[in-house]
Amino acid sequence: MKIRILATIVLLLAGAASAQEVRIGLDSPPDAARSGSYVFAKALGEQLKASGFTVKELPVNSIGGEAERLDQTTQGLLEVNMADLARSAQLNKLTFGFGLPYLYDSLAHLDRADAAGGLLAKVNEGVIPKGARVVALVAVGGGTGIFNTRHEISKPDDMADLRMRGLDENQMKLFKSWGTNGVVITMPEVANALQTGIASGYINPPFVPFLFGHGAILKYYTPANVSQSLRVAMVSEDWYKKLPADRKAAFDAAVVKAREANRAWVKTSDEQAMEQIAKAGMKITPLTPEGRKQFQERSRTSWTAILSEAEIKPFVDAANKTR
Image 1 (spheres, rainbow, N blue to C red):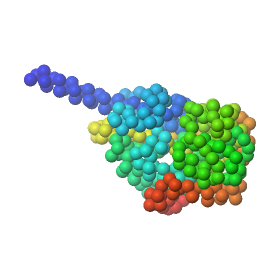
Image 2: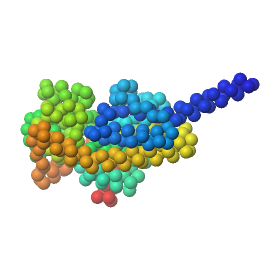
Image 3: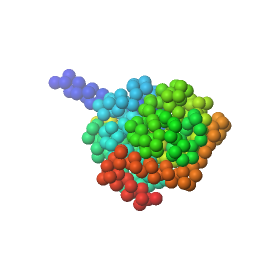
Image 4: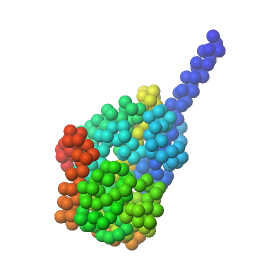
């Protein structure tokens, strides 16, 4: 009997110890100067350590790519996963509502819309039953712009001869609405694709070329503010729901602090990145008012290729209410 009781205590202690360990699966290099995702992850880890958790950062791709990290998260094998928006959308496609082109005027506007409309909570209604929970929208820059290797862009028709690198099928639909072509390419393959002409450009926040080594390849940039550049921080729901109340409260508080650090970083990152763009010799071409209007009007036709009118409505209503 004593042996059985002792074994039970050991198991309980082991479970308690594991609850204190938080492994964070990174999705970018650990560069707090240029990676908003890492700014969030680093701040989260620091706050958790201060609260008594043991934290371990897992380098990008060390446990697999986006798909593998998502599987490990939903299976309870990875506590925190820094992921792209499409991973959450794989569990609930409503996540794409945060990335609709030209719906939000700025990151601050998106945050207001989320708070007013309870948008992240709506997304989690479909994510949680599948084993994960999105705890924060993570900004990796401000509004996304258009980079390319060929020529200046000031209106959609200027893109007709380009082949853009697509992040996913939704970006491909967006390119089609603009009257241009695209090809889905993973980030590790982008540099070669740009150099060989397989792709002639991409949409990203202004710091991305310098984080991934494309600064010397790209020649033109248009600050088009297409959409807000977001990723997500998600957790294993199985792990999260088993946290004791005080540990869960400490984790939630750490997420709030990490989000604040992430938003503070965004305020200066775009300015610094624009300086780098100019220093790298890229030609910066702002959109004309008419060019911006054309991009906005054409982009809206891609919304219903991504989500239904009913699915879009809560996001549009919240954006309009907080504009």
